[in-house]
Amino acid sequence: MQIKETTNSGLKRSYEVTIPADEIAGKVDAEIKKIAPQVRMPGFRPGKVPANLVKKMHGEQLHAKVVNDTIRQSVDGLLSEKALRPAMQPAIDLNQDYEEGKDAVLTVEMEVLPEIEVPSTDDLTLDRLVVPVSDERVDEAIGELAQRQKSYKNAAKTKKAAEGDQLIIDFVGSIDGEEFEGGKAEDAPLVIGSNQFIPGFEEQLVGVKTGDEKTITVTFPEDYPAEHLKGKDAQFAVTVKQVKVEDETKVDDEFAKALGLDSLDKLKELMRGQLEQETNGLTRTQMKRQLLDKLAAGHDFEVPEKMVEAEFSQIWQQLQQEAAKEEDPDKALKEIEEEKDDYRSIAERRVRLGLLLSEIGQANNVQITQQEMSMLVQQAAQQYRAEDRERFIQYIKDEPMAAAQLRAPLYEDKVVDFLFEKAKIEEREVTREELEAAIEAEEDAEAEKAKAPAKKAAPKKAPAKKVPAKKAEAKKTEAKAAGDEGEKAPAKKAPAKKSPAKKPAAKKAPAAKADDASEKKAPAKKAAAKKAPAKKPAAKKTTAK
Image: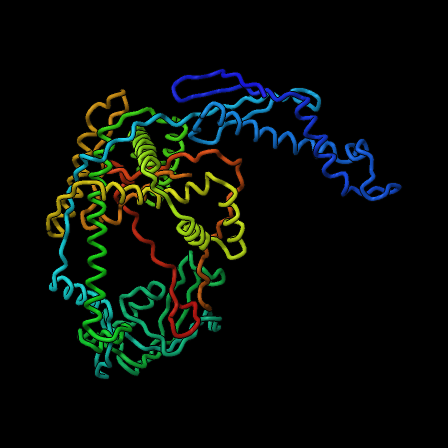
């Protein structure tokens, strides 16, 4: 194998690799000898078929296999000999005029990972803002839970149903005097104002009393799931069996037992744990943003363009999906288009932080155990249909890059935890509001930095769009850093995911994205939720709701 470097500029590398024809021919002959004992041909004893006949029968297939194997081995040899660390899968081209008997000439192009000076962790300092969970907050949270666990009691027979009251009804639906399948139910619970049934159904029951019978007329929506009912006018004969009013929910041992717990004390213990977990998540978010900002401020190395482009493509695809859900998709798409350069800068920052965290982790022997990786694979496989799970698991085993992408979020968390352990941390108690305000302040500070001209003529960043404080934790970016790499209306099912198509194995997976405190959010305004075309009463199968 002969190697000739053709490009060495920045992180870009190109090579011309020549594989001699006699090397390929020798490997083909070795393959023929290997399979000859298993070849069967009329007129010859088993294992005695001449090599030239074996080659005539299987030579083309064997030659293709040998060429593919040799190309892979040659690229591996190139990476090893030149001590290259490709950022992404190298692009490999075989000369178009190649045919058996000629030298194979490969063109191998790639970007390599930059050399990164691993920072010292000796002087790393961070603030940890902690929120103690008070008894009053626990009681408040349980009260909110009780409010959501509504119960109803029978009202007087003279009580007229109003919004918020629950009705127990029987109904029979018909179109042009003919009952239709799924349009009948008995003892169906319906809370007026819940929008559980098709539009117009509940409103016509306001004012009914226990024992009333009423016929109402409604029109099925044009987007109703059942084709035979779309846009049709229907009549429903309704019998009101009971009007119920909301009953006060007492927070006591019986309430806790209704939730499956032994006592109110157990419920308080569980609620305290949930609140602590929630505030701890906010604390970690705030600390992680501090950490990443410190790392970003101290490092400004060149990053592979293709990695940035791949990261930007993911960001852009997500933004476009969010914009498509807006009330005015065209306007939302125009807004993000105007800030495209800013999002590309975010992608560059993510890649840089991902590479940096990866180097820190490798330099300090941060690892993911085989057991942890197995759990990750099993969890990820659950998103596929049962018949595709084994294929997905095998795909992850065969593809180092896919495995690294799956491993990346956990690896980053472990590197971040390592840095937390090394840092000098000053802890102070704050209220939840103060913690949320601190997170927002960090976003604002980063936005201000983004307004300043970048060191290397990077596009000027626009201020980050703010997230409401109480939802800050829900907006946390999932960061990554690469390591070692009827009749109910039928519910629409999401199409089952297919296992990804196999790609050539990569020597080293690219570092993935890292959490970015300056990350711009998708347009804040959300499209108004569409009303479900019709929901059915839980008691029986029906198309009425």
